Length: 322
Image 1 (tube, rainbow, N blue to C red):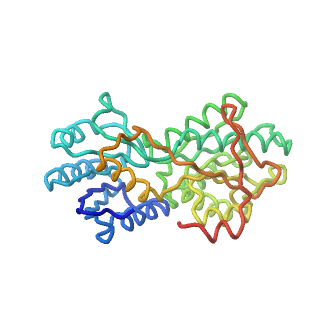
Image 2: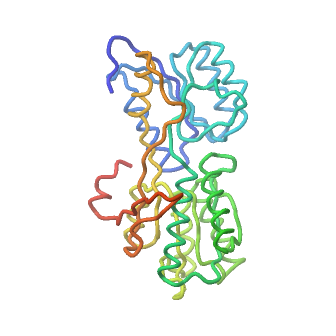
Image 3: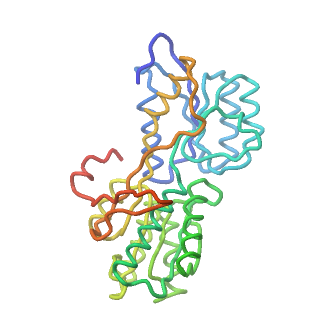
């Protein structure tokens, strides 16, 4: 959306550049909040450290920006800096991950994904797959978590914990891979040494960690796939980046639940609504898809609502923006 009549300065604190998803979200912001569209974007890379993001918020306040956009590395620890922004009269919009505050008036709105629903959909797919394929006995799960305390980690982890308890799945280990490919590989290598034949499913909380996990499996001579009785290990992932969908079509990732990083345009629309004096919702969720190459499971049900599972194709991959 193009801003008419005046230029707005937006300060954006990005978490870092740890994944393909994160890089795509940064590009979306830079493309949207351009000079041609009527914006001046001040971009700050937090380099995976909350203290850097807090420093950036305070610098944005000193620079007198019109809006502050924060993608928070973790949910807690933001009260002081956001209160300073509020006292300076600068609206703060949270994107992607969420914040946990006693006073929610310290930020104007949040825009992003329902991470718990993403996890619930992935676990519902696994339950349906195990029932349909009759491979549901003694399911040992390696749980490769994202950055501890981040909204994505919390939502996707809680979904798995609850599903494991409800379905009798055995979570062998929950270890953080920090959403990074190299750490995902390290976690998988260590777990394979310790648990050997007990791992049947690896639940990765983003695509980049799944790439590392798949690399570790292949180097160990283990095929990622859905034939558990034949010695394959089923890999679950999140993000649905182009490479993740390629792996899904090849059967290396069994199911990939979308987390859309392209929030620049939606964020611009929200800011324009605020500029025009409109009331905006406090929480604004994306509608997201789920992808697999396993055709027997074409839909999952979460809290009595049915969600389709898209069979991944070359056309879907070709049209992917990230």
